[in-house]
Image (cartoon, rainbow, N blue to C red; front, side, top):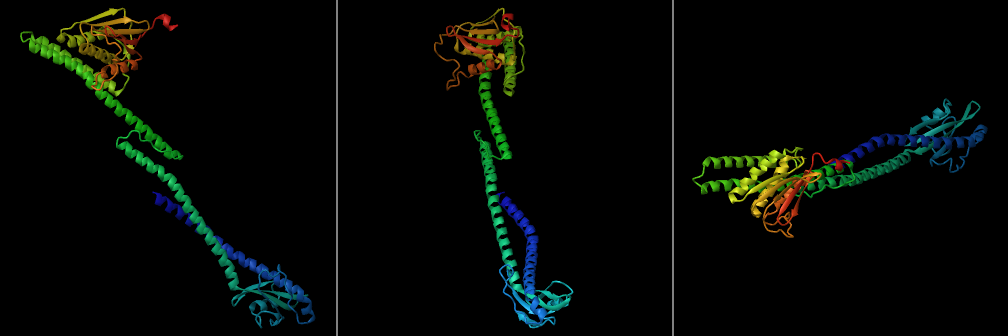
Length: 434
């Protein structure tokens, strides 16, 4: 690309120079011809004025010395008689067509080429009679030299202009190509998985927009992959809860062969339904971090909590108690809240002891759901910290889901361990609206 831009720029400069130089060269040649004619005519007129009296009186004329202004051309001057023979000065002994035409007095000035000279002749008149002819001439080689030197200077300027265009094209292509090469390198790093790769800023609007688009793409891809990794970890943790409940139910059925198998099958089907619901919730939350909100059906929701909790606790020989204390309604995404309560129930079943108590109550401007068990005092332990083993992922996920719904998840009491989910009430009290 660099070579192509430079070649096209130099070619364009060359074509423009040629198109400009050809007519200019012709104009220069014509200018020097006209200038030479003017110089010769001025010299001839000066001499004609000086010798007109001698020619009129029949005396042999003497060519006067010309000053610098009248002799700029640097040529030779000769004086001829009416018969076109040389009387004084320099020139052919017998005049040629230029001198003879001037002697005929049909024109005031005659210009032509004689041999290797440019000759100009003017008649010297006495009344209507021609008394002589003044001839001024300049070698053609001198005229050609003046034209050639000017053309050579023009050629030098043309070469300089093309050289400058080459330098400017090289500088411009360096400025243009270098950020493109850096963009290509950044895109390559992005393709290799380096999502910190950023495009350069070249000060060229179009390239800068490409760099900004590449940066935005890198950020989006990085966030997407990070979200996918987090979703994988969260999904594996969340799926473990219903799978554990299903396994415990099946193991309990195996340990009691005399029990009704239909009850175990129904419990297994219910656990499978909860597992399917969990998968659907996780997929919905994975596609968009904030699921559509609607008014929470608290009765149906607490029934789901009861079924999920009993599936986890009953095989362990533990009880679940759910109470309501005039709870308000909340407008939230049911999928997110189900996952939050699922994490808290799994945490109580796995790490707690005794009866697990779930209380839905009014917290002023929020619906509060407490999940408590009879386990040991947590003390200063941060339950939301993720351990190297992966413990804590669920609580961290639950907290982020609660915050995404505009609520909070916190450890309200370390002893006995009690976690509280606060969800914004759908209809806050009038005192809070003022």
